[in-house]
Length: 119
Figure 1 (spheres, rainbow, N blue to C red):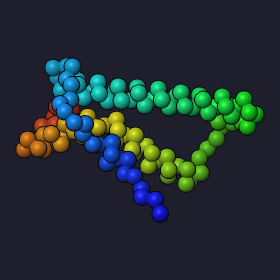
Figure 2 (figure 1 turned 45 degrees about the vertical axis):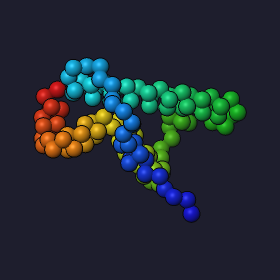
Figure 3 (figure 1 turned 135 degrees about the vertical axis):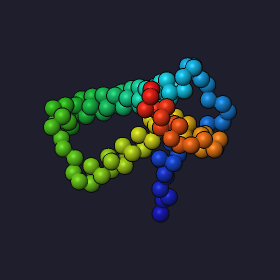
């Protein structure tokens, strides 16, 4: 039996060392971090999807129009839901770490909430 990997917990792990900061406002810094994580994820997925579509079409396995028309089964939809949660955890990693840092500094969680609302 293989052990399941908790991708959400793994995405929240902190890197060693101090996180670089490029902007004075921490909210802008978090937003930029989220945006760059999204851009990286999207770039990889677009390349992989394009590769798969081209290989399948070249081999005559599928027409690209079939991909657009496909609808997931209940099981596939559930698997996608789990993958989406892990994806969101990776994207929101900076916000999560900021919240953890505040907790470690004994600051109230509502301070972070207020910062995010005001940004």
